[in-house]
Image (cartoon, rainbow, N blue to C red; front, side, top):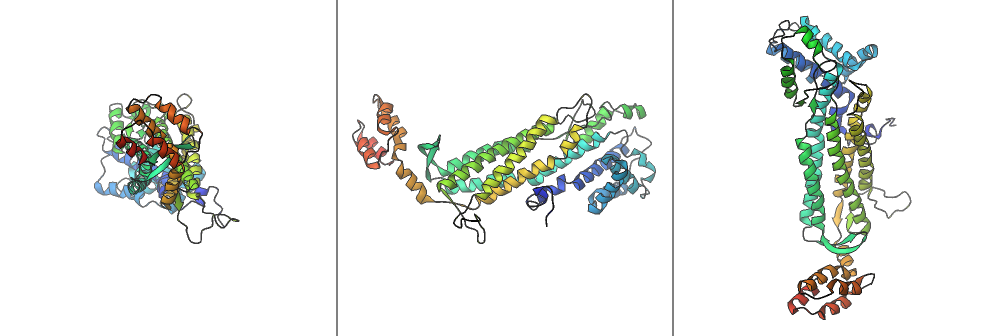
Length: 436
């Protein structure tokens, strides 16, 4: 029996599996160790830090094996240390020192692990690495996939006319493929912004002034060291900070993902409505049940699932954007517990995209329904007719069509007869009648 508290770790665990390598507790501990090791190596290469000599290539490789070989069993050891320290970053530091104590090339320099750092120096850089990797390896591929799916659907229906509904009422006909390309264009714009996005990185000690660093090594250019080190992680160095990264980067990312989710929510609801109208049919999956009591039903469950999970994701992204950039004076700890839920927001987002793609893959156009809808509403060509009348200077063009069609049920035959009597050239009359 599944006893997971969150459906992301229970019912939907398989769908969000690609994120586990980036946002699990194990992944965060592993990222902290990577930052600590990279920092230790960078210090060893800083000429002004004479007490820590440059490491050999072999020693560096051995250190990085701590990261590459890190697994659940090793994570459990770190958590056991944390049970005593009651501090997660300190537990990672002690674990790393314990590993290094067994390595001849570095065992005498353990005190340079976490040298002059505050926990946030390690945490914010770790989150930066994890977010970048999650975007590259899970989020952007999924978004690219749904754009590709929509583009393929649009191309296959680029010449298929469909009745439009504006305000829920029959309106000038549109093209199925064009309607799908609306979402493609919107998503491509946001994807471009997501690709350009970069997390920031803070490194500066207890309150961002390199106070401890400069107390130990006053002649080292720590600002330059910071810039080089943070850039080496693929992050943008922050020049002026308090104890923490102000999290404007997470707010920016949250806003981008919120916009993406809102577009996907719009798509989910449109797909639901098209299915309701019968414009799209859903493939029947053998063995699947639509209703516990109505055997005939094939419900649009994938789009409904997506809609619900997009709402959950955006509720969290909203909170991240509003909460994380606000910290009392030089810092308070309320950001820490919130940041731990970044993976949850990403999880609901990815789950929604997965559901949407699954739903889109089941859709087929019912061309008979499309034709019938258009045939049942000949009045929707009124815009075209009155515009041609305007073109030829016929006075009261709009009013003539309004009198014929507004609130009226107009048959095709009646409309053809109306067009035939218009004061227009024969070729124009023939072209307009061809629209019906």
